[in-house]
Structure formats: structure tokens, C-alpha cells
Image (cartoon, rainbow, N blue to C red):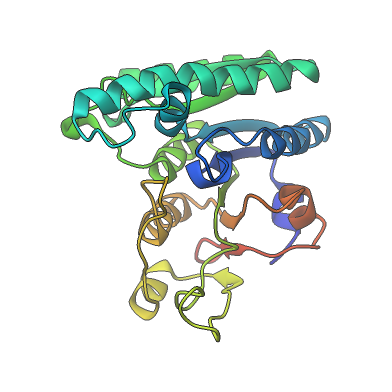
Length: 265
């Protein structure tokens, strides 16, 4: 991977998946969050502007209540997200505040991106928060979302956000090191793909597995997100979020992930 991608990007959207954000028992992984926020602070000190797209509200709601985990009724799911969003934002707020950084919450649905006036308002709010040194934390508004207005996964929410903001790089922190040519948990000879320049071709060539236990996304949604941002000339990186200092290590050329480059980049 070309380590200059992160070093040269000044406007970066970082998506944190549920599996990355949570511990095995479903509670918010405070050690991960501490390390992640230190990395964000380092990037900001380098003059970079950062937006975070964060999953984890629903699973945080389950962990907070200690029940409802098996309830599949839509109203229970929405209630869990309502409870968990408070816990999620409080965790971000507490740790960012230790470093003198404020955060702002933005909850969105696909309907917000389908209306030009709302899209403009999203863009203006993002720019205003960032101009004031505040880190926007974006999540889907699952407490009101139904199928008609639901994006469905935060890989795509991150892609939408990156395009609307005019970001220069989308980084997806997941529970995988990147995109493999086949499932590494089932194939010992699976190879990590360092660079992808043609997502459509890759999609035809690799085996796409299932989603994780906590997340709604998977390889398929990551490829879809890559297609979207690449179409606007924006590169995307998929990397293993639980690896300590993963963002700073990639920017230093010390760790690998999968880089999706726009064609003719």
C-alpha cells in the first residue's frame, strides 16, 4: 500500500465497525477507543480534518440493559439503539474531552441524502463543526429508520458522508485486515489484496463471505462503498481496527490493509 495516501489526505472519514468498537461480550472496548482517539488526535495535530462514522449503538444498548438481545421486533431494535446511542456518545465524549477535543453527534437516514436541501444542511453542519475544531460523529438514525429510509449499514453511510463532505480518503476499520481473495478463516492459502483498481473485476473474482456477529456489513458492503467513493475520485482503505495504532502505522508504511484506488488515479 502507498503510505502517502494517508499522509497526503487532509480530509479523512474514518468508519469504525461494531466488531471493532466492542469487546467479545458486546460492551464498548475502552482500550480500543483510547488508542483510536489518540490516533485521531495525532492526525488532527498534523492539520488533518477528521469525521468519524461510528457503529455500535444497538449492541451498546444490549450491553447496557443486559436483556432484549434476542428480541427481533423492530420497536425493540429501535429502543436499543436509542439507549445505546447515549452510551456510545458518552464514551466518545469522555475520552475526547481528556484530550481537549469536543465532539458533535449527527444522526442521518438515507432520506437525508436524497433531498438536496437536507444534503446541503448536512454539508454545512459538517464544515461548521470542523471549522470550530469539533469532531463530528455520524451514525444512522436507527431509532426512526424503517426500510424505506434506511441506509442499512455504516460502510455505505461512511461513503455517502465522504462524498457529501468532499473527503479525500475513506478509511474503514473492520475486524479483517483487508480484502482477501477468499475467506482466510476457511482457506490457509488466502492472500491479502494490497491494492484494488477495479472493484467490479474484483467482485467477480473473489468469494464474498457472511457478515460478522455484531455488524450489519460485510465484504459486499465494503466493495459497494469503494465503488461509490472511487467514482468520485476518492480512495478507500480497509484495515484491521483492533491493531494498535493501525492508522498511524499504515501512514508510516509499517502495516498493510487493502487500498481501493480510483481508476486513472
